[in-house]
Amino acid sequence: MEVGNYSVGLDIGTTKIVAIIGKKNEYGKIEVLGIGKSKSLGVHRGVVNNITQTIKSIQQAIEEAELNSGLKIGSVVVGIAGQHIRSLQHSDYITRADSEEVINEDDLDTLCNQVYKLVMLPGEEIIHVLPQEYKVDGQAEIKEPIGMYGGRLEANFHVVVGQVSSIKNVGRCIKSAGLDLGNITLEPLASSEAVLSKEEKEAGVALIDIGGGTTDLAIFKDGIIRHTAVIPFGGGVITEDIKEGCSIIEKQAELLKIKFGSAWPGENKDNEIVSIPGLRGREPKEITLKNLSKIIHARVVEIIEQVYVEIKNYGHEEQKKKLIAGIVLTGGGSQLKHLKQLVEYITGMDTRIGYPNEHLAGDSDSEIASPLYATAVGLLMNAVQNEAKEALETESSEEILEEEGELVMAGEESETIQRPKQKKERKSVFDKWSEKLKDFLDNAE
Image 1 (cartoon, rainbow, N blue to C red):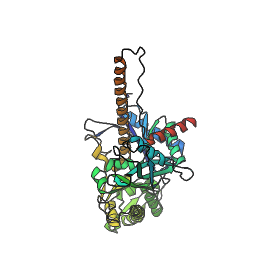
Image 2 (cartoon, rainbow, N blue to C red; image 1 turned 180 degrees about the horizontal axis):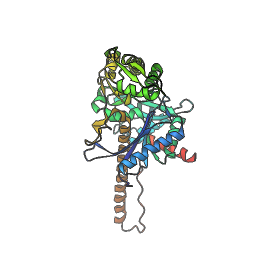
Image 3 (cartoon, one colour; image 1 turned 90 degrees about the horizontal axis):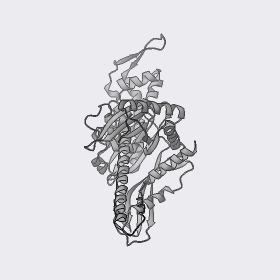
């Protein structure tokens, strides 16, 4: 199998596990080289609850992707979601030793590292620390403080917190499936990478990713992530309601939802009926489409209202925080008929369905451009960015090596040629955190 310059995103969802292999083409778009998917058996509401089954499902998806692409998968970027995820706002500051020197990346790192030391509830760990705006010596609303003078550097942070055990379980599954953990990213952040445009993030937008087990929310304004939330309901509970309400098995309920389901009961006539074969020689069941859409409508309204409460908590009603670009729906659940209209009706906000095709190369498989794969495509984009960053760091350290090597050769008096110093690679706090997790997993062997 070929090993080359490509990246892998792995979306461990409640209903499906998707592995996507891809790379950046010469136009800066993502070229998908292979995709593998399998039914997710060990995940409930975004959280791993059966390690053995999850490992099997991951291996199945990976094998299929490897077969499709003829490539060997090593390291993957994984998404994390689930009802244990919560977010909070926090502000922190550092006093710089020398205000005569300009603020550099190390200062920002020190400030970020300080936030990571916040004491959380027992069993919780900080996943992301996302800076919002900075203040330098009391001067507010600074987006990029590098290069400025100042003694006191302050910032507002959006802090995403999750349960240590849940995160470690995901890491364990990856390792046991024979893969390396490249990075862990919050799923709503990955989905937003894939389906939102720069302009939307500037104007203010709420991304609602309706998955099988959870509904993820990410709010952006002025190009910065402002709020994230994971609501523990998704397409799965709608299927469950249909199953209970119509007394049919889950497989039939899922098919009914996809083929005939609608979030708007008014459009179905009373005489529209679908017949479902009975179990083991029993009479077939007749279900009116009006009843079906009433069941779906009730649950969808509940999910949207919970999401809307989160959007209002962010302060959407205020003029300063208004989300001009409205709502973008994505994920498998967004394909439900008339959902867009219902969301517009409940929230009064402009709504569109988000497809991840904007960042994909033109000749990509049309199947991948479905909202179903938004998170997986976002994770792949994250993996591609990580690769590019690493390549840049390696290049710059090699250049420094060459330069220093030449300097040493030029000084004729020096008899012993010293080995040039390696450039200190700047690691994001998150990379350090990933390493900590990897060490933990290695020790747990």
